[in-house]
Image (cartoon, rainbow over all chains, first blue to last red; front, side):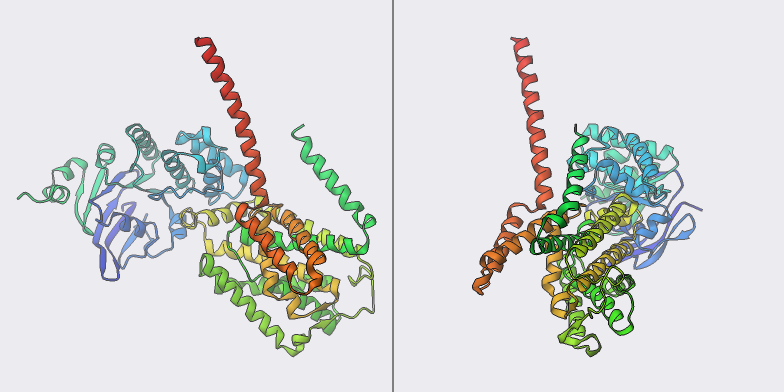
Length: 238
Length: 337
């Protein structure tokens, strides 16, 4: 049994089909990349897994438990952590309070939540910001703060939506190091990305979507040789 | 020194609050009581409107429910007002589930509009309900006096009651702020989707905030009824009252513990001064000036008086830090030269 399994997941918005019969699976402790050109339906698939959209058809299971159709808060409790394309920082709080709020899902005591928060901030190299207002941090720092916040709910699977978009090369390296450290903790990562340079070297598995349909999955090397993937990204040869 | 200052302020405040009933005549003491009562309502409103960011303009419904419950229980069944007050709080807390069920499916301005509608319904019900005195209202009997029945011929006891209720409401808010609830409510206000993604059931916690807010608002309503010994829909269920509860917090600073207290001092004093200075003309000059002042404050201090004060402190600190940096740069320059 895989950690995460999607079976025939479709999502339609009125007449628009954003995902059509998408199936794939992720094993525990694996880094998986979900890639595809703009408008391929990556974020929609992602939102179905995180509970923000109920799928129109198909099932999603986490560790054998069906999570499709559950609201986001129930998916979070089941073990799905997530970040957003924009960081969605709690701007009235300090960095540590952002992470503490999430840590309270497992332990409501403020003191122990703060210990967890400080440990996770150190994990993403933000310990210096613990008591600074979160709103004053840079985009790159807020992305890592969002990762620390998602980790605080102790997820089995962490979904990251374009964590590397808009970062400079040194910031990308920093983020890659964090992702590898998360995998070493035994947490599976599913990363939506259309910047391929960041994800290809670290992924154990790549799933490629194009116009809502899964066109390939496999190791990064297999996928990058796949003619269907090449034509989706570069267009067909004339 | 830095640590001594808050203690000094606290001690001075306590002393002032202790001597006020002896130092003031009945009229001025009444204004202080009005300040305390409005502050308590603002603090109660702030739990939902400030911390959780759900701006309600229908809180008069809970105030009225508190006032009517304790008054009806005392008049029809001879139940002690202390118990009646708690019963009023319980009734408001219970009915807040209907309030939340109907309003929380809407967000932002639409939520605020829905709360107005629900409060209007409550007002119309009480205006037409003969058992509850309909539009004529209810008059509490004055046959007994003293702490047991919460009826007094002079003002001082009401001062202590209003102060006690304010302190109780502040302590409850402080407990919320310091616990996980405070963090959850701020998360819901800041980023509801992110709050859900970390497992917070936002519907449930908005309702928790509403129950607390409704309970303490109703206690304020019961106290008003005991102080005035007369209530009618116009005095305890009006939309103007709902707006005042929100205004006190917004003026002082939403989502801060003492914001509504400061807002209440400023707002009530403006209200009373404009009334005594311009109220006699009968042309509503006092309300025009009152409204104009509120507009000025809203435009120039959108984060409230506490927000404005914090911004000032931050700027002064930044200026001091900036001066230090300039010094360091100048020294470096000299060394280089």
